[in-house]
Length: 396
Image (cartoon, rainbow, N blue to C red; front, side, top):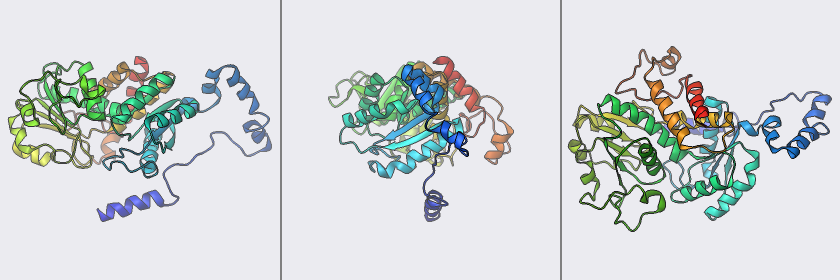
């Protein structure tokens, strides 16, 4: 870990601090270039945009520029680190947008005393951008912020911690269920964690046909008798019954999806799950249960985590660059449920196809094929851009 810390700090400091820079997309080497880039030539696109706002997509970078915005209240697994400390993460997000989808990003870290102050700031700077990617904002404020921005802006607004996670979970789940001989409509699904990611994942699966979802948080099962539920998890509550704890919910469960904390799933509960169970232990950096522990208990498990050093990494990088690419290409005004579902199906289908040689080389693998240890494409798969973005754009 000491070696990782040094390498990570060196990576961010050298040869220049940070991970982003701004480069001109047009030549500026002669006096004529300068007269076009700035005064007097720049007045012409200004007039065109003033006459018709849609011309901003023609004469500026608006159509390929996304704002990655945070208040730093829920940074990775670190918690409320503040706006400034979150900047390396936002820069990292920008790198992924550019590397995988060719999208330019300005990272914006906002010191806001209230959610409404944050919202006003984003609204006021929104004309610059073709889309807004909200990041690392704590629940329940993240729900309110996203909903209000969607109402007030005419460009896509997307909270990746919620919806990016949901799309990848859904894509991986479709394949996992198929491999384990189960269906989404009949599977008994248990969520541990009812925050931003958990609620969004559950809602997307529900919209795709899941009928048996039980949500569990620190207090216990979310049921209709709980007085402490908020608008975004109340609709996921089950009717009050004898199922009150995680142990109750896990009995005969087909699927466990953890978006909670390290070691939050007692390994003994795995024994009581149904035949051929599915475990998505997605807490980062340490999952709810380690694959080695789960597989030692049962040999019929299909497992995924959020880590790259275990098979089946559920990674948001498979979603947000391509979702925004499709949305920007379609000039969509919002990211709809249909667009998210289209992305999930495109990812699911791609994992079933033969893996290109360049992917094997990138991961130093001799072979890789659809199965219990490969249910979701790898982030460096070059087919993702065309396949997922096209599906999203068509849905838009």
